[in-house]
Image (cartoon, rainbow, N blue to C red; front, side):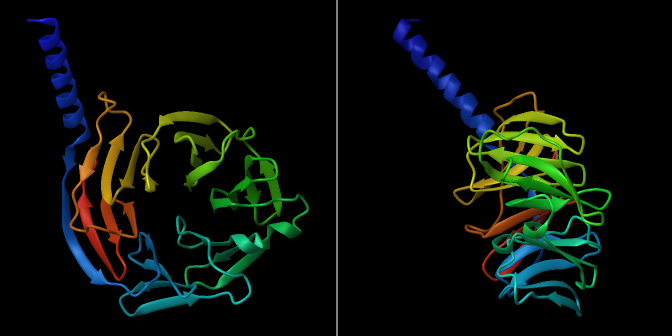
Length: 269
């Protein structure tokens, strides 16, 4: 085999392997579909309630049960955390303020971080454990925990060196992706772990410390970094050609378009 032919053959094999690795398919079966009059769909809780925002009114709905909450003085809702449906977090970034709601959306407490003894400016927040909130404080570029019963704040991470592009929290972990698409995690004890680099994305959702779903150009993909083939990215085939948001919980992928939601059953490896 001549040198030129051998090079072309190797390039063909390389391209074939690359295409195969990037175009695995993940089965998605449509299981329900319904209309939704909302500006933003937040997600579901384990009790079957859906959460959404319409005209800056936050609501939870299941059948004929409807609960609503609105603050007329705090501006637009920036972030909603329904990780604990008994203590829901509403964040109003313009006023550096968080509101905690009970399961009927009654206000339990309101915290203005600008009035705290320790100055805190919060662009990122989430529910943690033991009456604590995850906080990213831009004044020191550190991740911390805020005890909302004791009104105490402590930093747990070293200062971040890059801007946060995306973040997500669970009770024990603060995940973030920086502007260079590097993925990290920080636990409640301050242990920071580099989880690798993620592809360029438009929307992103972390499933756990080694799996995530992301969208790019209105296509959805699943990635498992523990896969022995690090190039494998599986496309999730859904009916929607465009969508505003997706969320994943308990093997249910919800796709929110302008006025409707479609729920798909997918089984990740």
